Each structure stands twice: as structure tokens, then as C-alpha cells.
Length: 291
Image 1 (tube, one colour):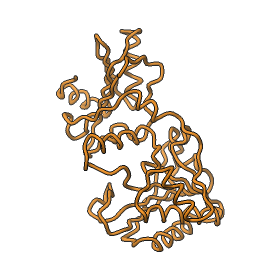
Image 2: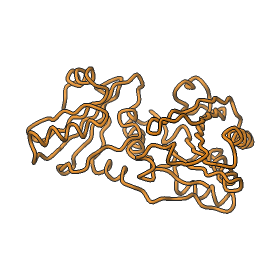
Image 3: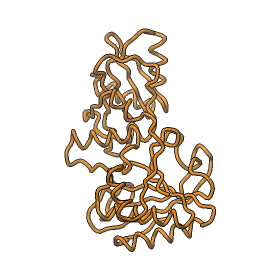
Image 4: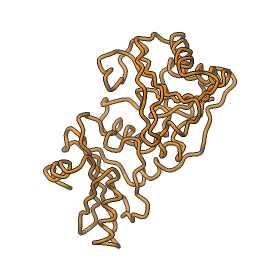
């Protein structure tokens, strides 16, 4: 494999690094989609090369493997892989710490999913379907999302479930699953719950207050934090609210690590879901429609 010192030197040049290893050579790629850069370099030197290992690393200050991939699509199209080819993710804080995935698993996980709804006419039916289709497991989370779906369909609010709680969040989902398998106790299958709401009938303030009341009816709200979101691919800033709820220790990240409980993050738009979600998430249906 690649020595730590080489990865460190490459990361000093760029925030993201990809190395494609064939039987004879290692091809280096940098930039925002470094695997594309590495593949183009390979085509120049070894056009018929068969890749046996992909090595991905990124800089950062967080001890999280999922930051190496984030939520983005990993571009593996047109690359020929050897049987049992592997992907090695290097931890941003400790480059000696690696997570191992198979290329086949990654390709399968980031494949386009069928557009799917969470169905159900009663809260019990909705909770059963959430349990079957997602990886939500806490009773209060199932109750909360079921009530939010019920709220959305009765009030002209489209709601979407995003992120790791869906069980279909693309490459990031596989990384989290492998962390649980390879490093037991390091994290759970999901932590924060991410939602998007779309409504031309209710303002963001109205939706945020309605959701606050629904969470309060299910669990204890510790605090709320308004932190609007800049959407780079549209150049817009959209309303976003974060709710900290529950008293047991959860997996709250970012600036809320010191608080007990869990976090639900809700982003709102009056017009279109597509305008507030990353294109790869939207195009590959890495979400569930709730209402």
C-alpha cells in the first residue's frame, strides 16, 4: 500500500487525493473529484490498465471516515477493475487508520434507487413501513417521523427523509455500515435525522414552529438553532432549523457534540426539492418521500 508520508505530501497539495493502483503502476489524482483526475492520468500512461485498488484520502480536522467521501457520487464509470478490487479510505486525522470496502459494494450502494414513498394511512402503518424501509430504530424517532408524514400530507407540505437514516444515502451509507462492522462501538448506523420540506402554502417559520410542536409531543426538546443553508449549485441561501431533542446520549455532531440527545435538521423551500438537495442525491433517489 501507499506509505503515510506520500499521502501526507499529496494532501499538502490538495484537499482530496485518489490513487488508482494497477499491477504495475500507481496513478495519482487530485482536485474535487480526484478519481476522475487519476483515471485520466492512467489513460495517458496505461490505457488498458486494470485497477486493483482505489486509495482515497482527504484533509480535515474531524475523525470521520465519511468525510473522505461525503455524500458525493464516486466516479468509477469506464474504469476496469480486477476481481475483488478494493477501496481503502484513510482517516483524515490518522492516515494509518483505514477503512476497507469492496469496489463491487461501492458500485451497488451508489447505484440509482427507485423513487420511493413511505406509505401508510395510520401512524402504526407508517411506523411499520419506516421500520421495514429505513434504518430508523428508536421508538421515538419512528413515532416522530410517522407524525411528521401525517402532518405533511394534511397540511400541503412535502416532506423528504434524507441522510443515513434512510439506509440509501449512497456511498456515505456504505462507509457508515463498514465503520459499524470494522470498528464496533465507533458509531451507530444513523445519528442525525435530515429532512427537507417544500410548501408554497406555509412559510418556513410556520413549518419550523409546527415541527417544533410535533417533536415536543413525542420527546423533550433541549434547544433549537436557526442556521440557514447556502446551496452552492444554485447560489441561494435557504431556511434551515436544527432541533436538539431527547435526553439520552446521541450522535449529535458539529457544534452540538457537548449536548445530550439527537438532532433533527430541517431545510425548507417554497418551490422545489431539487433546488435544495445535492444533484447526485436527487438524480439517484438517495432519499424517501414522506408526504
